[in-house]
Image (tube, rainbow, N blue to C red; front, side):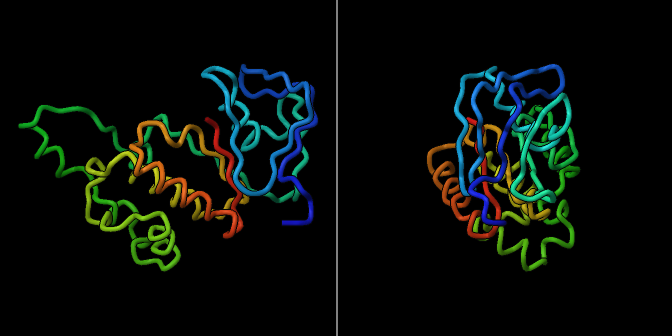
Length: 195
């Protein structure tokens, strides 16, 4: 990073992405570190995340970045099983055992990453232990979310935008995810949580 006291500065009176337009009556900045954007459902938080990730210059958006080559990555958790590339459906118990034969383990899904030092360090920092031999459909919501975050960090984004990362997590999983996310700025990745 450079010496700017912000990562992103929004200078457009309105921001848009797709068919959604947000009024931006005040100058808004995203600082380095961990930030939270709060708002009710339908307020435009996800659109704001998309503007940061993909809509820098679309729809008349004017955004100033601390660095021109800054990488922004957004994760939404609406389709938590998107990581697998497999449609996960509900089956009767008697069918489940045969269906599981086709669901990969984490190690099968990540392939060579399962032995990559950086990957393993990230998994450890996110308290992802003993998950490599688990089938994806047996991961808890917390384990799967943390795995998605670890996967996103492989691209070394400067800013990671997380859309509702805590929904569906129990209190222990929320605390683990929270601690792991607080450690990311020391690794060079700032975080914006849309809640």
